[in-house]
Image (tube, rainbow, N blue to C red):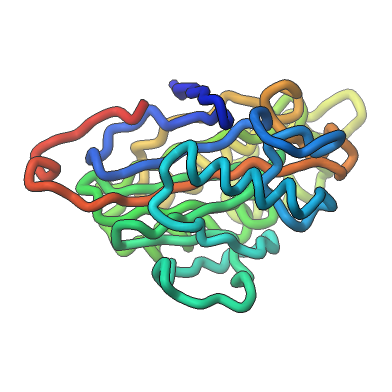
Length: 270
């Protein structure tokens, strides 16, 4: 189950998972911002052709609405498997790193990925000592971006929890036989995530493929899934639905300082 939250400055989804109280995560929706036309209205991406002033204003609204402890660590996503560690809020970054996932081990470091059909996956350990986010398209998924993110978190897999944010659903995600073949070459069991359609192509289930990839590396505490960015136009941007000219949602995760009580407490984020 995923909890929706609204505020005067925007709206977002939060994971339903069992983590320490100092773990925070959310995925934004498309409403509540200043962008217009194809980017209406809470677009957070600078690289899609939107008015830069609108993007800056939307990012400021996001920081204020959810009380972020610092500017998010924005990435230049390339559908790869590179994972970077957050360098700290005070670090000077002339360019955004080429990466599709980020991890953090200290409070105040906000990891973020942007999506508009691809799958955002958020990670945390149960003790609240690390978080991570991954941008998962089919290329990154078959290439191993989830496995790379789990390795970068340096935690025992059975102590990790993951949440699958909003992505294109299996009824809308049509792919060719070459995509299916790539996944089956990696794991023959992936065949059950592909359904042949009347056009002779395949409907692919990103959520199922992600869950299987996580299970292979020992991460079994996984929630989320079930939304469709293409079909739910009022809630989500969709690259496929909108012909490539659209905004991006952001999925973020960060830690706040732990208190002595945190070592004995768990909660479901709302």
